[in-house]
Figure 1: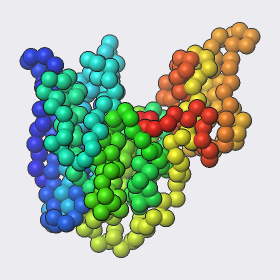
Figure 2: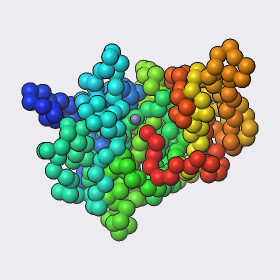
Figure 3: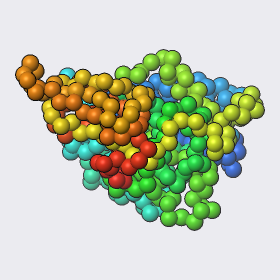
Length: 357
Ligand SMILES: [Zn+2]
């Protein structure tokens, strides 16, 4: 395993940012290669601790000569966001210099060729970081971007072209749900990872062996040793299943292979009801992630005028489904999303296109 340090110049003289990259060299050039990163939204740490638990497993495999495909690991992909504190609160989602989401604005290339990346030497630090992350990741057959939601189940975003070919990955990782999307206009990292392949001939794009996904490892508070260990095992199973690591015992168990191996919930993005709050106030949730609800069920009550007649507003399920996520904080403004409800049909406020991470 080789460790190198990446440096990203800051927006003014005298400061820069660093992050480490770990590379495991594969022994078989024909084997697929993988790129894993965590904490692009710098405060989302379940994936960081999952990688911390995964690294000894990879080092053991390397010591035993079992790594066939090259594996690149970036445990903390966003040193800029990692350093952003505003009045004592960590701010890892948006670049404070431009208010741009760290998981938007990645260039959507016409082909998987790093030569097509823009010259960002005159751009802002976050643009330089995004360009560098794409340089590191493009060309790998498997690209995993580890995030988390606010409070939620473990789920994946997957481009529709990769489903159900990626069912084995979802099964190996042990996630609860998969959300399929079909168009990225905002430039998410996942979008930038899959879009360059969409217009290539099938025999070049190789969707049968390609993996690109945003992994939502539950909620922001789910930074936990036991979960990290289980998630690391899930990532390891995926790498074994897809031929990057040899592990005879795991390979012969066979329960994570095949297009029908995933038994969780699968739905298109347009089936998610985001439930914008009708009023501002304190949220009293009636449901939590994983709950199944009937159409018309009470989801939450917003206390907008405490102690007054008519000071509470109830929000009901517009369709039957499962609660995927909810907010971790209980204060809400009018129009902010209360939760994600995934149902069996297109939601009334379906927001087309890109994933919602
Ligand atoms: Zn995120």
